[in-house]
Image 1 (cartoon, rainbow, N blue to C red):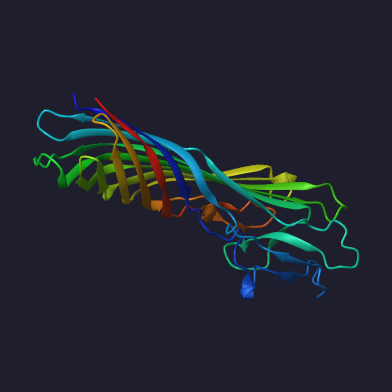
Image 2: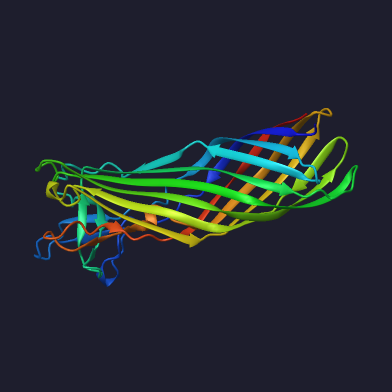
Length: 331
């Protein structure tokens, strides 16, 4: 008796990371557009630019959450909740590149790299096509105990809570460029793929502030999770400079302290004693998450060495937010 289950539809946005898909060159070259000379004859061989991830959007992702509440003998409620979002994805493509520039200076997309770890002039060119795809998925759950205020009836209620939570964030970014020497060579498809897995788990503390009325309830629920993020980061390249490079993979694992802060505001309409409609807005902010675009170390140590574009993991913020709507059934 007095247990309940809540079903919610989620419509959430994920904030993608912003990153340049290349390293800085020497002499402060403007990566948004620069000329280059391949032969050392001081003649312009082409105009190149390095793209960014700024055009990616990961909005309006569908999801679902189920929460079960169980009253316990010594007062308060034990609540068990789990949610999942559909995999979000987006892609960007370079404008059509000229395959026959005639007397015009040809235009390229480039991956710029450091040379043995230092800014230089090394670039990888694509003249047929260049595409970037990005994917992000998130799911998680928590178990918490919400203390009973001991004050029956309507009015303002303030209820502290404690518990444990888990959050899983997996993302991937793939860059695929094709070079054929403006139609004179066998096309070479070069791929740079970066993937990440984040496992955030630990304790949570927070509170629930509600104004309860026989017909409706409005409330807010701030929470903070104190725990760690055990993550894996991987960068894989394929035929980066030529088919002789083949596939080359580097990987890093680590575990770091990673607080998670979230907030939830909501309203409920009590249709009957046992049925309630629910709607709200929620956001989740994770402070130390490794993400694929900024994990790529753009470097080249020369053709005699394996590809120098490898993983160097970093952590940054991860932010999701959105609307919730559903119903609650009380037994």
